[in-house]
Amino acid sequence: MAELTGSKKIKTAVFISGTGSNLKSLIKFSKLKKSPISINLIISDNVRAKGLAYGKIFKIKNKIIKFDKNKKAEKIILKELKKTQIKLICLAGFMKIISRKFIKKFKGKILNIHPSLLPKYKGLDTHKRAIENKEKFSGCTVHYVTSKLDSGKIIIQQKVKISNKDNTDSLRKKILRQEHKLYPKAILKIFNL
Ligand code: GRF
Image (tube, rainbow, N blue to C red; front, side):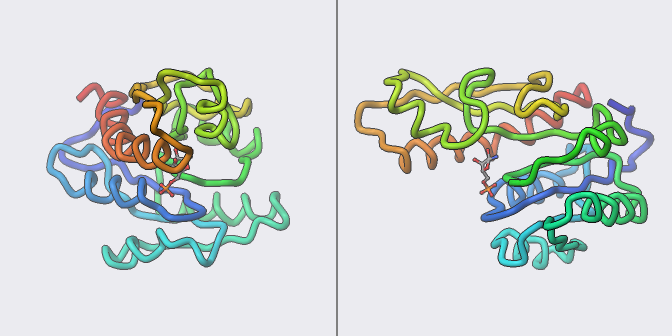
């Protein structure tokens, strides 16, 4: 990852589709002195994404882009990223698959958070599958994004115990609380901080 130059923070975009609780934790983190990043842009494919409200509170620019035509959508996003001089992308509950071409343009600069201990439970319904398989542990992972879904190099993981009282929803909430700490930790780690 690029070195930090002086006191300048790395301009970062967060991509969301829904609640945006990870976006919220990243915004909070970015305001700390120790944070190497600033959040300068929020991209959402969903005009109703709740997370957009957090961005508004902090006056962060957002761009809502319909993904019915992926190629066109990515072109618009790339233009916006360039305009805002974005150097790092954090996917946080972004439900669209980004093309190989796009990833190539931001090689090694796109991170994602996934609610399982990868390589276990790639894709959707991670908590349901973990409970059905009677796993003792699940967790979350921050990893680099490559064109293979949920398969890029792992940066950091946090294990979470599954109790026999857990259901999909309680496990989701338990893991989400850890996600909020893990994403900032991953960012500190990639900048060797
Ligand atoms: C999180 O569980 C994240 O790991 C997954 O999608 C969920 C997004 O939650 N990729 P939120 O929108 O950040 O609250």
